[in-house]
Length: 167
Image (cartoon, rainbow, N blue to C red):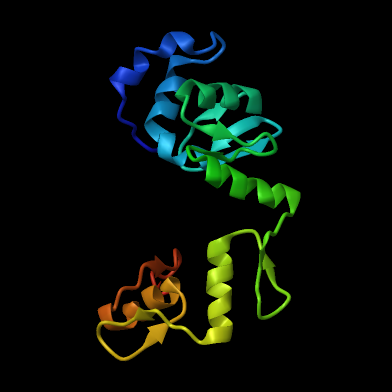
C-alpha cells in the first residue's frame, strides 16, 4: 500500500467535494494526482492498481477528478490528464483516427512522434548514440537497453529463483 502525503492547501477546498465522497478519497486523489490515469474500472467500481483505494463508481471517480479542476477525464474510460492535447491524442484510441501518414509507405499513426520513429526505419537515421562505444539507435529505448550491457544493470528478477535480467 502506498503512503501519501497530504496537500493541506488543497484540503481547504474540500467543501466542493460531493457529500457522497469520503475525506480519505479526496486526500488520496490530491496525493496521487500525477498517477490518476492508472485507474481500472470494474463492475465493483474503480480501483487504483498501485494502492488500495476503491471508489463505488466511475461517476464518483469523475467527481473526484473534477474537484482537481486541472484534470480532464475521458468519458469512455478511466484515463485522465492535465493537458488538452494529451486528451485529444488519447481520444484517438477510441475513434481510431490516425491523422499522421508516412510519405514513404502506406503506414498511418495516431501520434506524430510515432510517425517520426517509423520514418527512421526508412531513412536509417540513428540519433541515439552510446557514449561508451560506437553503437547508435533509432529509438531511445534501444539505447537504454544497450547501456545495460555497459553498466551491468539488471532491473528485472525472477520471483522464484532471484535470477536477474536486463530486459
